[in-house]
Amino acid sequence: MAYKLNNSRRTIAVDFDGVIANYDGYKGPGVLGAPRPDVQQALRVLRDEGWKIVIYTTRGEQEISAYLARHDIPYDEFNCNSDYKTPGAKPVADVYWDDRAVCYSGDAQKDLERIRNFRTWSGRE
Image (cartoon, rainbow, N blue to C red; front, side, top):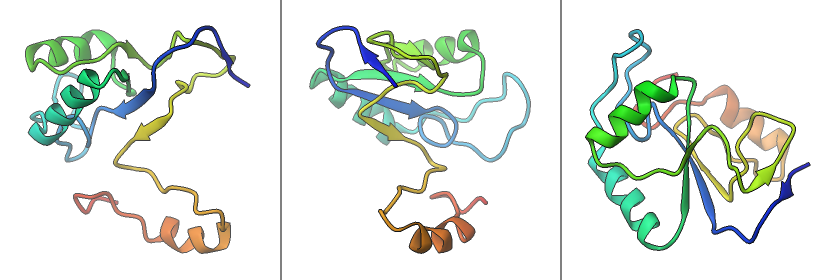
C-alpha cells in the first residue's frame, strides 16, 4: 500500500527503452537508441501541464540522466516517486507508459490471448 506524503501533481512513469529511446534489443551498457521525437514533445507538453515525470528503467541512473540532459528530455525522478512512501520498488504513478504492457481489461480470460500474442509497437516479442 502506498501512503501519499503530500498533495502532489499527477504523475506519469515512463519506460526508457522502447518509449523514450528507440530500442532493438539490449546491446550492452552505454548502447542507447536515438530519442523518439514524438515522445520528447509529449513529455514537454505533460511538463507544461504540470505533470511529474518519473523515468523507470533497468538501466543505471547516471547513464540515463546524461542522455536525458543531452536530448533536453524533462524528468523529475528515477524509479521512484518521492511523493509516496511505499515498501516496494515500483514507482507510484497515475499512468504507466511502457512498450511492454498489456492493460488489464477486467476479464483475465480475455487478456490471456492478448498476453500470449503480445508484440511491442515495433513488432518485437
